[in-house]
Length: 429
Image (cartoon, rainbow, N blue to C red; front, side, top):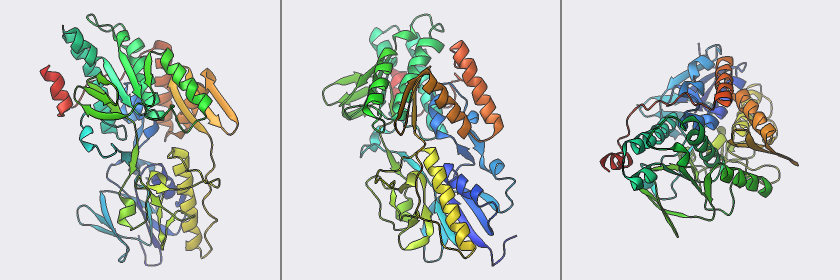
């Protein structure tokens, strides 16, 4: 039961940052409310596995209520925040409810951005939500089914051409996973087409892939993708997307399946609290992750623009969000006890990891640069470790081990509907 003396902490967003903040305040003399528009926590780094039929959605998502069920000072509310009333210290929800706060933590994440071309979204979905992953899975699998049903060689070629826009970790991982799906899991399933003839194109506007990694590891990724049959196009700017393909500055690619992995934009949290923001909409927070002029409000995770001690941007990865959540919780606990806040937030870099395909990944940690099979096993163990709950860790480990032995992908279900222009165009060909 809440009392007047207990501080009210409202956390908006149940991602890595928000959930870690809530859990780190388990013993604080405060009443915590976690608000999210979805009732589950999502492990976004493995969304591409759902999109390529390697895992089921339930393998990488967990109900927030079950995660916090044993935390007596925490409650969970399903709702969408639309504004923050700083003067009244209230969070405003879409149904008109108001949640009073003494401390507010905004961990609302980011979405994909089309750099001013939002009209491309229906034909080039990004990969930030479970709905995105199941939509992409549907389009991938339907493309093969429709190619099997067609007698037109040109249409078959367009249906089995897949374009991924963006050469960051998501784009690289998607390209490699689609190559494995086509060359192994689906290779013997069709009679009129050979999935091994699938054309996979990874388009990146920069001179190299994986810009956050050293150039030598970027080159390893490019070579490995090429070995797997992926066509890598660097310095290639996309100037148009439609239901039948992608237009580059000097080329046109006929493809009925386009996947967008080219950039992210922060949630509108910075606007809610009147905080300065960078070009991607990330809040320019103070050294302790609070909003300048409003020390009771914190912004963390993909929603915040934070620098390391060396002045480099803190990456939008799970470990960074969890560390930020722990730091904010420490600040709140200290003030509740009447003590000064800890020193400025310092990000501890545990390295960058990216997988390319079976037995192939890259790792960068300080002076250590690693690629190949050992890097892939380390990548796998690291991702299993960050999953929530022993059930999910066990299920994912078993599923990956079986896929490794059998080259299969068992989650190949075509479900849902796709009422987009892209889907309609394919149907009417």
